[in-house]
Length: 375
Image (cartoon, rainbow, N blue to C red):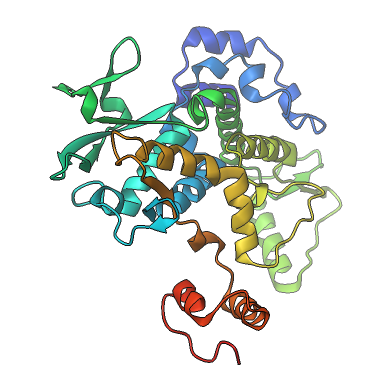
């Protein structure tokens, strides 16, 4: 079975599509000068529309999986708080500390961000309210369970109807979501990964002992020659072959593994997620940017990627159907941007000597009384 037949079989393509594809040249995608940045296997064989783009398929791509873990995982572990004016309320409401019953807050927020990354919107369904009528417990609405009306409003979870006042809808900062806006890139990446997998599943021998004599060797002679040759190479690092036998070195051609095309598509997916390339371990040719500390990297990650998710969630939870008027919900981003201890204490010393801050302010920043800071 040829490479194209194997791809068609794995993806369940119809014979008609496969027959049309087989009429096309097989040379182009394997040419050394073709990195598949412009022409991918899916486009060449006109099979792109048949590759399903789902969350599960997208996460099978390492770049998307890494991006999801960074975006959703990072936002999920940042606590939420409420403030009124400049005053931060010491005890956040239950909705912000544990939105779902029996599920950790970090897990609830992580899955909320996951939905906002891949889909146009996400929903929480209010199942409990406090004595004042504000939402205190919710349940996450899975995308496959959401039942919508013609205007896109949630009217049911599976077979259960829901009341409009019990629906908290979050709109994705990415617009239509990754599965829609990056559909073409995901399809191309899936096709290229599959093509590379096919090449890896069809290995070639590393060394061939090619008999150029006119007299064919018996199978026993062939086996003895290979055994003696490999044994001597292993023992001495060298081996002898008669004049009629030449040594040919084989290996997987780099262009067959589509390495350059995979790199290009990986970088394209990183851009779709608005991630800095380093965040998804994607190399960028000519990039030399380095960071002195963790907080500098996190500042860039917030500015380029996380801030829209922070805003989409916090702004929605600050609306008057969730939070009393005058109160604002925010993420405590200091956990990401807090400088290391040495930097903080040097800053405190400068502030004390200049008279800009006092010891009480330092104690409040550190969350405990500090001794000898000014020394």
